[in-house]
Length: 393
Image 1 (tube, rainbow, N blue to C red):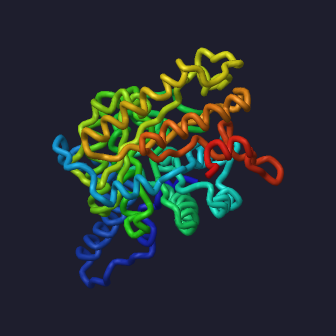
Image 2: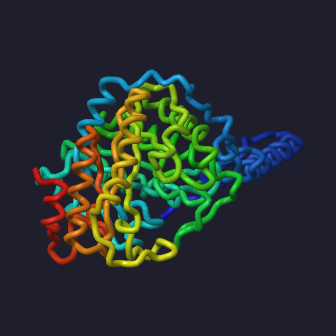
Image 3: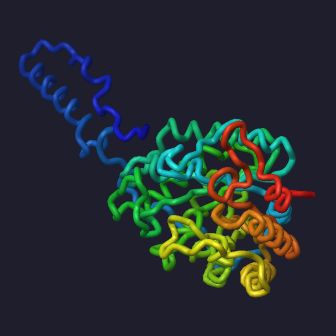
């Protein structure tokens, strides 16, 4: 699907030289024509198939937004953070290397679930990096862009806030690549991150204010010491075309509240902060095949010790948000389906109540896959006990 090459001499093969009477001038004209044709195909001439300003870009081409003296959140940012309410992640749909690789695609029936009033907002994870050219320009495949457009617009048509993020750019974090994920030259990994944001920001600049852009999901690994710089550059890129759009940023260590003090926030009032909370991890991820070493199944919830672990990160996030003057929401929490269903219900209701007691909005991970509140098999149906624990009014 990815468009990586464009013919650099298209439209030139029918060019003809002007007529001259002098044989010497005719020779010169022929040479000029040959040179023009060669120039169209050579990188040195800057043709479509060769180097351009964008595909030789460096970090210097993406200046960072001023940071270190954040003014606190605007009234609009605070109101939007509250309006996120009880949301859901459309997970395992657009953030695999290819849509469908992890068992789900974005279906209209999933979008229509918003008509029931359970969900106040949707977080839409997207893996842009595997749908962009491998060079520094990171040109996003037009067909994939159109696909994301369709999903975003149908979600916005439901009247909810939509958080559009960048998800699982594995090389940016230094992670092992997923199946069907293509590697790129390490020298262009960071520049591609910013080049993609330049395109995304331009693409959606005229969408509803209910579209919120989230800079990156769960920075960790290689990003631990690079995050403040790259995050500020990404905010700067987004602000070129979206001077007032709300932007979500979060800390390193997989959006851990413990890393909030490491953030150097941009001097921008239209920011919302996010953290993720999967404590107690040995309960929420028991039986998950991607966790090494595997966590044994049979863990229950929720003891006093487990509740303490669940609460700690929320208290840290709330205190940090109050200190810096920005709202914080929980962008992900949830429990994998290998856990006992009754324990999952207890966990979900406890986490919901703990988050909301601190005045924060949240997005459950996720709609219809391994953590899902909805069973997509057959005609599809909500897992009623889990839905009621999370979204019951």
